[in-house]
Amino acid sequence: MNIQVRERPEAAASTGIKTAIADCDIHPARATKDELHPYLAKRWHSHLETFGVHAYQGMMEGPPYPKAQPNASRRDAYPPEGGPQGSSLSFMQKQHLDPNNVALGVLNPLNTGQGIRNQDLAGAICSAINDWQIEKWTSKDLRLKGSVVVANEDGVSAAAEIRKRAGDTNFVQVLLLSRNVEPLGQRRYWPIYEAAQEAGLPIGVHAFGFGGNPITASGWPSYYIEEMVGHSQCQQTALASLVLEGVFERFPRLKMVMVEAGFGWAPSLAWRLDKVFARLHAEVPHLKRKPSEYIRDHIWWTTQPVEDPESRDHLFQTIEWIGWDRLLFATDYPHWDYDEPSRVLPAGVSDANRQAFYLDNAKQLYGVA
Amino acid sequence: MARHVIAPVDELPPGSRKFFEIDGRPIAVFNVKGEFFGLLNRCPHQGAALCEGPLIGLASSSDPGEIEYTKLGEILRCPWHGWEFDIRTGQSYCDPRRFRVRAYPVSVEPGTNVVKGPYVAETIKVAVESDYVVVDL
Image 1: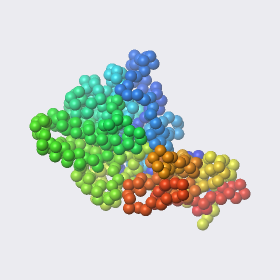
Image 2: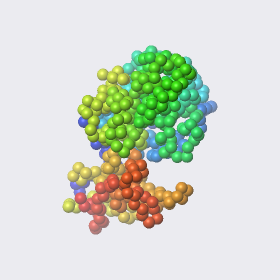
Image 3: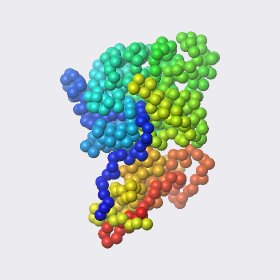
Image 4: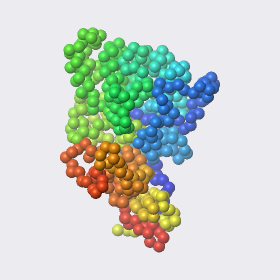
């Protein structure tokens, strides 16, 4: 028999892409629950054993439902050595980074410490996650860059963590989530923006979050499919708040990336804001420009998800409003809604725009050569 | 059409599946309750290794609140985006584009209300000969 039979297919199912790409949303996972222990003071080991965590919302231990695939991840992304999807660097290299020619991969760890009410514990866990990113990922594969995770509900501790990591080339952005205790533009979060601007780090605002608020503005929905589309609502709330509270007026060099919430809604949000602003600007006199101008100047957008209009032209018109220089490619590896690099853009994109989209925009924004 | 012997039958007991490659084509063979099915191991949507997905049933509904679950163990769900294919025919049952685009015709089958997508996974003929699993390619 000359046919090799396998229990599993070869790992790299990717059809690959010739040109080097940046992947601006990769989710590394911990192989075991104890993996953070080396980076946490003994005081917190004993605290966790004795008191556990007190969260802003319930169901912190594991997802409340499998979210479309186990761990909301590709079923083919379990590392051969065991552990959850995204927990093995060698398997991530073999399955994703190498075949997809990833030249820059931005790590966005989720399920970190942000949702913990005890702010000292939240800060300790976030800081541990940052040490873990360096030791397990970014120092072992120079293509990978970390995101500084912070206990965002405590602006002072979050700013201290950002200042601690400032200048460390293992990190290229600060990570926030869209669902927080309050909308992201409010002043409790300003120390984060001040420290990020000072450090020259963009802020990634990733969909999801642990602020205790439901995914929609009118409560908890019935279906996961509602949660999937609800992320864009949360992101719109966050972005409107950032603009209207004057964050970009106060921090004029701040750059933000909207991660994993789509971008097709961007033009209509900007249009609505501009229209209302023309009538109600007296309420927010600290704004010196139209809302859309702050959005165009300060916001970048990752793909995955890419909206799927009936007509390719509608997608291109949306991107033209946003700007081909503002879109960052992302796969969301190893999550189940992963986008295959070679399949994400329809035909008809110029070489210059493709190059910007796949690599150059990200290298420029994140300051990576 | 060439015939390829891929494994003795006892290496593929009911409930199991095997992956292999013939002439550069990734293929998987399934034993579903004693019946053998072969599929190209590539999802027509974004190219995932389709056959690593779970075999599930087909959920359909005539009205909200009325749910029928049929074809148990005969629907293959892609490991990436969850697109569903009938393992017998490779027919797609889960084309998200269809649910949005009304211009496409919707076919209704007896007892179900499913939409058959235009994406058909490539099926490979599998036969059992003298206790060997044979693939026609």
